[in-house]
Image (tube, rainbow, N blue to C red; front, side):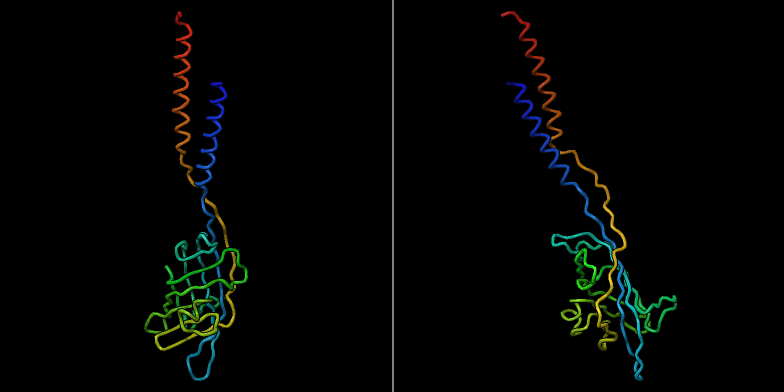
Length: 207
């Protein structure tokens, strides 16, 4: 009977160990890049093409999105052609945006939404870049898919969704803490050993 009780006790502790170890699994880290075509005007009837490019890194929140609370890296570059020569409206930003949301696994770019500072060197003050759902409700950009807003109004617009590409995923190995059940197991086994020894002594004693 004592052996059967010990087996049940050890089985319960094994379950505690499994639950404790499972809770220590690390979250997958996702890194994406994106690009979106824009047009801007400096007056005199000329329309200039430009691109907003950048990248972001983060983990999933409870809804399956990378959100502002799970974002770990974010950066933008505006009007920097593939040839490597900055355009007239060149600008950059790196740091935390004001708003961010992206559904992990989205390959169309339709769920990418953010509001971010953007410093265009052509203009004297900081500007704001808005993409996706943030365009209408944060930047007053109407139905455009992307805008660069300045103190005097909308400077550049995009009418197409950004192209988003998954760059890397990584799941770092988290240090698994020793569950309390395992510590309890050691204590219990030591106690059982002591009790076993005591029983043996008692059996040797004369009645």
